[in-house]
Length: 300
Image (cartoon, rainbow, N blue to C red; front, side):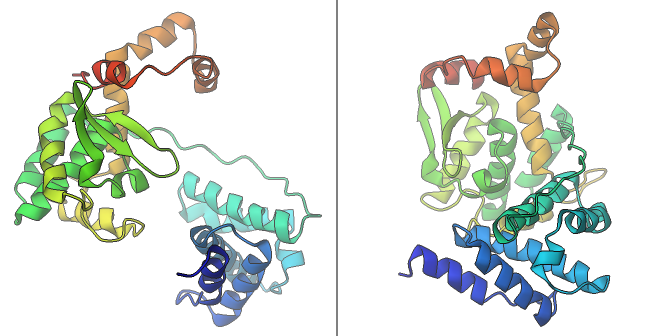
């Protein structure tokens, strides 16, 4: 099995994107190799960011010269002109990746970024909308798709999982213990999340169906279209748009926050900034699993 550095080098050497010219791809390979990313997935993200920067440079007549393109003013011009079709989170990620490259390839150039707007929280689904999506999941043409769709909705609205956290959940990660049902989340932020009681039956059924496989299906959880394909299959019905996993997470957040009386606490404390709340939480101890299940899993 290839070693860590070999996997990174292979990912960079094999970069041949159909969306960009060979000249741009070669520029991206050269620059990212010099930056020495710490893993293959990071290399993939940096290659895409640098290739976009290179394509922008070609479109405005600039040479593919790292010393020129990684200058702060060029980076900011690139983000301002090319990022207008992206979400605010996408723009921030793109700029962060390009600046990361700049600090390693051209360390003498210190970017002076302009502020980018922050994304607001997505709107939670109401009870009727969740019921409609669950009914649509149950009506899928195959048992496999129905149980996977039900698992996706229940893990999103019942445990706040989305993205990699959701795609990586296997059937044996769902466990009945501590007086409820929990899901063991792996990855960058491993944790145990109590599942809201209303979704216990559906999550357990989806986990049982998956066994040692992934609850929402697929063989490679790093492929984003695993979730996208399942979500796309749920589009339909009158006034029922495609399911949004971000809104499912917002639904879980809103449900638990209401159950804990968070809004009343913040109003009484005069706290409006989440950073202040984060500073306070940093001084507190996290309760044990049994208490967490009783506190969070019982939210209505």
